[in-house]
Length: 407
Image (tube, rainbow, N blue to C red; front, top):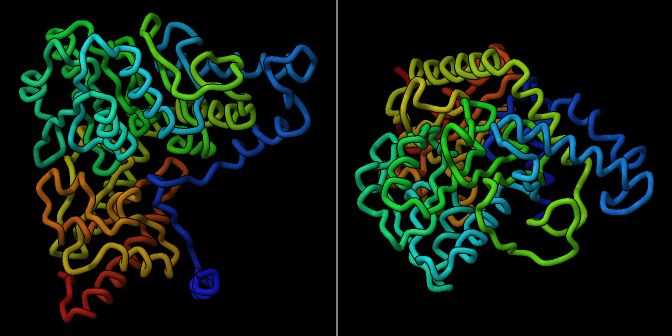
């Protein structure tokens, strides 16, 4: 296996230009975030923030400032409303499992949409082992949740509803405020959680305006370090820990806080919101240039998800018929363009994306999808390079099966 990887990497030598569009699955940290983090590994605030010595007090002060800064970006009232976790997956696990265990005896129904990310979908299904039930709300062909079905589903047994603010694969911006209003009107005691990882830093997101109880944030999805995320928990909401161990500055997540990564996440947040409107406008411009260019050069395509303001500004998801997605990611990689095919969480199981199947794509369309996400740090020259190599890559793959897709 290692030798095979070495051979693959050797084939990439001499690439003239690289464009990283796989920001769904990881991201490239800007140098200024790396520089912000470095001192906290070995020069300052490197102590355990619960201990009574200078490095510990320094770490405590730094982490408290980070709590405050992150809480302000989402409109949280108290810095204690934020819990730092090792990532989005851990935050979603804590939100769903912790909320359900705390509410046990008050009801047993969990409601999610059928296009939730895997780390929500699988946890909600797993809770059935503990006596809970899971109901999935369908979506339309653009991925919008059926609000009437949601209204029908919420009852006195409902303890938790979890619907992502923005779908991570097709960029659908869900009507979260309307969904919260429906849930609270049917059952005031039901908690509402949203995975806001793909909304944070890309669309306006305020926990007070939305009236949500829990929200998940991700660091790397705003160009921060991997291995860091956060969970917002509204003051007064009951929650059980899902892990046990030494309690530090936060009651909900045990263990010694990772000060360097918390600092990096906070710096990434600062940069994302520093020029929020211009950042969003640039991402939208680059995304539209990319999508329009692809549809101008190729045929037999399917655009997955909504268009315009109802879609996250960074997201482009296109199904390319007669071109298997995994083969296309490899072909593009050899040219220095890095994308993903379908859902990164499901592709290793050789299964089509559950999101694309839910919006009505057949298996061939789902398997032929590529997901691309732009960032504020990319350029029009980057997109032009992608549009230069993508048609050639597609037609090389299509040529293997005896067909072409150029207009």
